[in-house]
Length: 499
Image (cartoon, rainbow, N blue to C red; front, side):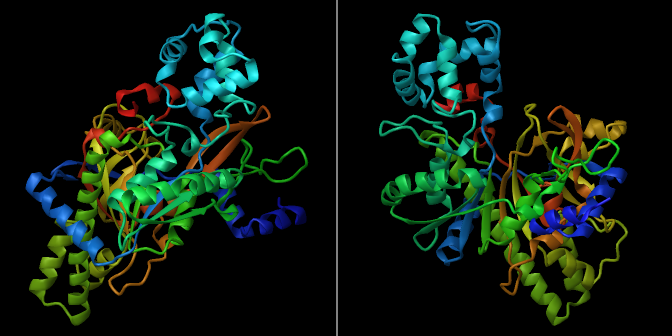
């Protein structure tokens, strides 16, 4: 099935023949659905700290920062913004010339509210000889939209979200990348330094670096810190082979194998290379202007405080196990694993080896928000490969839709995953964990795609905050909805939270 040419192509990517054969086999077998215990809720896997507890957690976090631990803010930022503008691409290609759908009308009625308005007006003047108002007055709406999307204009149809102008300020509009630099200064700086890491696509690397060179110094000056800003790309070795509907390898017109990016789960490799004690993870488009940042900063410190408080106890208990724990101590440790880390033995023998295994692994605290119908994953109590039950973030594709009880759990779940994580990635001896060892490889996704009109199957690796962190200790904390403000379409920038 694989030719010498295929093997050469595979080797150039840093992938083994065995990996490809495993991937092709996964297309045939599919991935098993997960066995669920329940949807997580307040008091059942989700903590809702009161004001006094929040204050204690913030103090714990500030003490941890003051101790000189290294903190990194990790921002997946490689996604192109093209999906944000799906409606506007459709308008440019439509057989009508004036805004017709509600989306189009809202866009043009509110166009002056966009942070990119001045930049768009300038490119319209340059390319059309007229500004936005004049073009709209003469009914040339499509020229305005085209200048926003196309390469000769702002090129927003091809740029990554991180480099679009999102928010207005008196000193000039800011991109999400800049908002993340500000956040880094506000809650993730230690030793006078904020470490921020962006994962970006190869074709946008130079643009990101140029924007950092242009903006970072002014933020460093404003917040009295130094920045250490680094970048990485998704590794070619994490790409996955595509398959035909009959599960044979999909080939390009030249006969070569078609590879596709393995999804955000590939970033576990990038995360594994970050040298840090604690890492915050948050998506590039979930940012707010400065006037709304205090709430975000407060809750980031709260969830980080929960993390370092739990980690401190876990480290203490691991040292007790090393010294030889008494029966009473084993019972106390088991109670901590069960109640604080929400990991239930479910028939497993609770002895020192079991407790060590459940304590000596990476830890993450995930902010979750009340479910308001946003698409995406949620928090569940799920059976693991070893028969234990623990907290996981699941996507709909991981749940058996034919199972009525599971679908009820999913549709009636009280909380949603906004991708708001803080992670502890070193063990109790100060050594970094090898994160790929904690991935549940049976939790990938298979989806239907097409290329040049031909149907294909695509394989996604276990998601970064799903199966890639399956074997981590996980704790959920309810955070306010105000900390979750993603931008999925260009008109989301018209919401009050982005004005």
